[in-house]
Image (cartoon, rainbow, N blue to C red; front, top):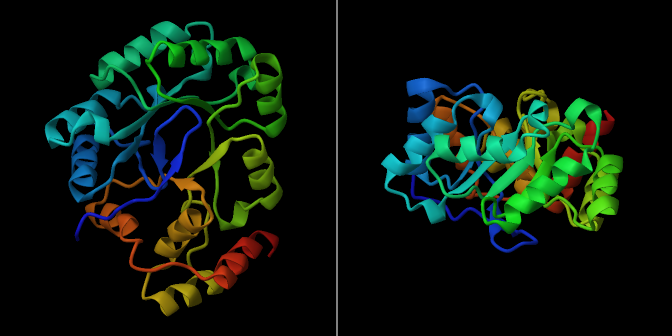
Length: 261
């Protein structure tokens, strides 16, 4: 496979986030290291980890050993909700484990105790000002909680990472997020999808693709960042092989409507 040119979306603080990345949840130890190395070899340039994944060291070592310049790899990590109040030391630990001077995106993994926590959000913004995080955002936040952060600080999260798939499509949520300047990043895109659904099977056959590839291409064609996780070399490769076809507008609409079925 020739290395693809993965499209990216601009971030409000500069730079851009690749629309496709590798999720690393449950990728541990040697197997996790090798999965990340293989992904970088194929052409992935976006890696998603978290303090809670307990694999930041493996991700960082894979980046260093890959020979790919650090500046070419978009690295995301996340603050555990239980670390609210210890934001600075938690990020310092993540950077040390990753072996990096900065991360490209730092997210609050979940609302701490279900609350928006503007005080934690201010600490993320401070880390951004210090250059330790190029961009900051949240994960698993409701729009009302994002509004609370905006009201308190005047700054919207660059990204909200949430579960996203055809069955979870919410056009209003997507539009309202964009109106606030927040990019939607989807995780677990395949786990919650019926890959034998007749719509996906038919569209896949029309494009000579798999239903899983259609789901991932749907994210890209609708401007939603997607980070499928896999430790399988075949699936890591297949999940990247999305750039020889594009969905038609009618196909996108048809997949969007799967959430209503």
